[in-house]
Structures are given as C-alpha cells and as structure tokens.
Figure 1 (spheres, rainbow, N blue to C red):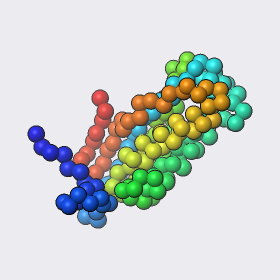
Figure 2 (cartoon, one colour):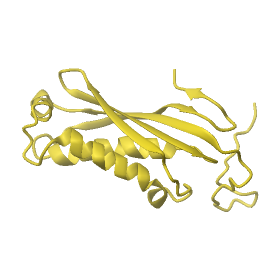
Figure 3 (tube, rainbow, N blue to C red):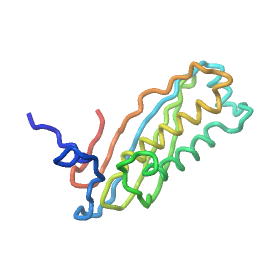
Figure 4 (cartoon, rainbow, N blue to C red):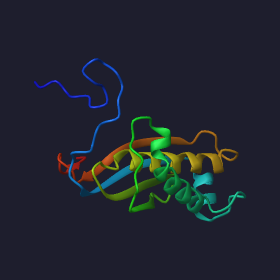
Length: 159
C-alpha cells in the first residue's frame, strides 16, 4: 500500500503552502454538503420566514458565499483565490432537516474544495446562530466534499 503524500509538509516536517506555480490552469469545481437537524417547530419557523432575525436561509446563503471568498484567511495553507462563482442551495425533508450544498467554481492552478466546505460550514453555523434562541439542540451534521472536478487528480465523487 502506498504511503499518502501530505503536500503541506516538507521533507523536514515543516509546514508549507504548496507551490502551484507549475500546475496547469484548469476549470475546477467543488461541491460540498452539510445538514442542520432541528426540532420541527424551529424548522417551521425557518420555512415560514417567521424568525425575528430575518430570512434565515437567505442570510445563511450570503454568509456562506462570503465565507468561501475568505477561506484563505481562515485555513492557513489555502491559497488566496479569485473565485468565479459560489452557489448555495437548500433542500429539506419537510420535517426537521435542511440540507445545504455549495458549488464553487474557479479557473486556476488549484482547487476550491476548502472553499466549498467552508461555505457549507458557515452557512450551517449561521442557521444555528439565527435560531439558537428557539432551539439550542440543533445538530450540524454530514459536512463533506461531495464532488470535485479539474486538476491533475481529475474527478472525485463521493459514493
């Protein structure tokens, strides 16, 4: 079995930002997922837009987009990127769970997986923040990279 290569550690064990100068510029897309599970009363407040702080899903969408753009300021080894687009969507089970997906696109030498993961994470945290007075038991769950395309490693899709 091959030993995994940790690209953010040099041969002496020191942390580093990966040198992408020789990598090809390609279109890269990352899709990430998160879910927020809550009690049905909180879910209904959100869906009926009755939360006193405002439209929870739209505020969370903007927070997720902003977070994707600031990922390099949060994750030490991430490159500052000029992102082409960030799209955040929601689905729900009409009962107690909001599923969040973020799609981030770029044409660059490095991918946007961390930007997509940061977007769904901050989106979920914003939902929690806006609704915590009604439901402190909300559960942020299932944060993962669902798909990525572009670059030398090609396509990854979670099964």
